Image (cartoon, rainbow, N blue to C red; front, side, top):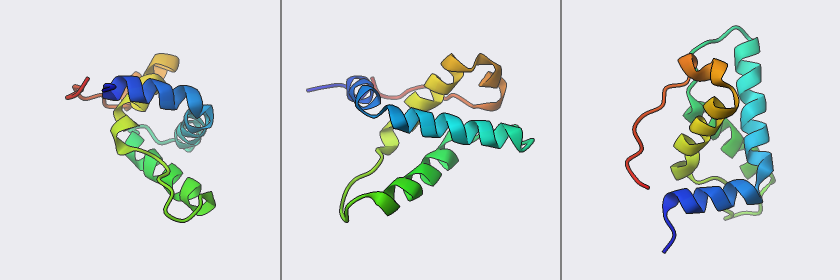
Length: 92
């Protein structure tokens, strides 16, 4: 059985548009002069947008990946680290 991290890594590889959209939304947030960023807020915005386009009953985004994407944002944009709270991961 795959770990959540392994499932995330596969999802991330298979769906590069997810990170691109998340990154774009974060840029918009910071360009609007906002500072504290809740990645969950962006995740729900993305879920809304993707769900409108998906077939009925299609599962668009897994909440379990939110914390991993938050870490990916900070890894790629270390200047955002003070504004994105990272909590301890509870599952591998």
